[in-house]
Image 1: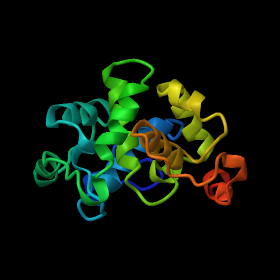
Image 2: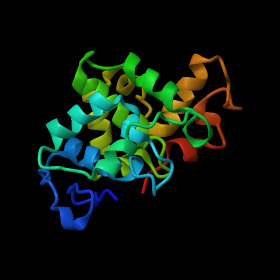
Image 3: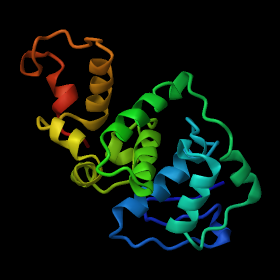
Image 4: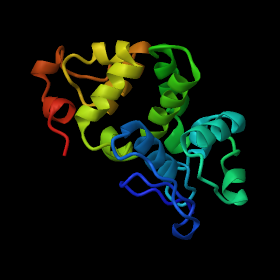
Length: 195
């Protein structure tokens, strides 16, 4: 089992000796947290290898966590294809949305896109599913890696709701009953505080 508590330490188990992550490195902590939750078959929904290919995921682990040496069985599990039905049916759509809005088309931005899509499969607010300290940390991450999406969310809608709304709009699906967010009875659900 992979061990990745909120303190930013990553390890397949407590006895293996964790790889240290700088507490100020929110992105590194987010990768550790999401790998520890979404890449763990014991904590559904399971997202093998963050939905990346085996080579890209191995590169990510080696670059971000050089002291991390997971068991071979765990590495094999990460090579399984992602199940894009059931709870993960939107994974590919979210990943494509992030790819379309990356600040740059490079390895690091693609890794962050996979990180976000994987975290979106969790059941809490996105900043919590990323193991980030606050929603503002997530907003900073979005501004840095996906500035186009961050700019479109000027009204500060909750991020997961914003992503799913963007996917529905892209497909021409109108999910909101009100003509504007300001007059919607569900306004607080989409724009209220996240705690």
